[in-house]
Length: 118
Length: 114
Image (cartoon, chains in turn orange, blue):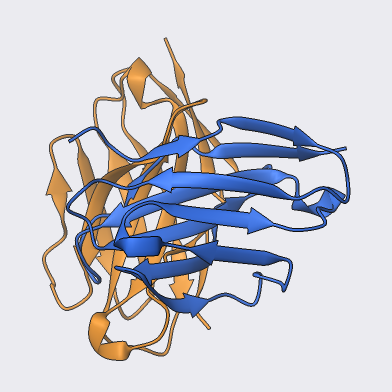
């Protein structure tokens, strides 16, 4: 079974600075997808960024980028120019590829609570 | 695109009662997922549907839980003989397909069993 580990229960960053959230995962599969989801307080979860395991290039979405290290099974999220609206719980998630069969649900880590200091 | 909706948003019930939650996915999405999230944890996968077919159920889904998706549209999740350990946020998500397709989440139903 796949597992996802987020070792930072809470992170704090000054507004406009850069912060990196860590995520490691364990899998025996070679083809899969990784995601970062954001869950603001009392609001629904939204996708921040995704990475296909077969792609060597790290994904980027505006101020959000990832550092995907497949051999190390590491998938960190970097948020540049942090804004007050970035304050939320951030979850790293793993999903099997369709070719692997089996369950199609996401496997989530426990999350990192990101605090933005004004 | 009105997003994924869930009803009710909050439910308080007494131990031993049955409860039913509803999820309305984004209309063109053929896959629908149920997750459970307890305080301080990430969501845990429960089950998913492709159209009306329930394709996978997690070990977390005990015999007291049942989910349906008649006609491949909305879905219901029923919990029979609720226990205090069932207290959690129940999240529904939908997507166009498997793999890289984004799962869009609803606001969740918070269940409190007293």
